[in-house]
Image (cartoon, rainbow, N blue to C red; front, side):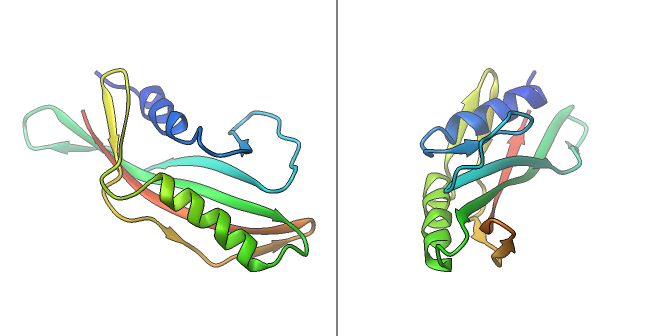
Amino acid sequence: MGTTTDIKTAIFTAVTGLTSVAWPNVPHEGVHPFVAVHVLPAATESVGLSGIDYHKGIIQFDCHIAAGGGELAASDLADTVLALFPRGKRATSGAVTVEINKTGWANTGQQTPDGYFIPVSIPYEVII
């Protein structure tokens, strides 16, 4: 039986290819460039009468660069994240396999007081 922790562990393990990651509830220096990662689960659905649960959600990455770095630098970082999670990728932790079931996308960039970031959304699913 899988858990929320297994789902997040599988996803976080797959992120290790990035240089600077701001993890949830872990202090981060905010040195640019960096990627903040969040797991946004949707409601769990049951599959028929079988007792099987279907978990899905979005892995949200905020790709941050320093102010004045230009939008293309943020786009390059977003492309790096998208390349880590192609459609069909699987990541496992314990009895849980997280599958990237759709191609992710980069959203509109946002200016902040000290930089600029592009949100990247990666849909995932897990059947337990």
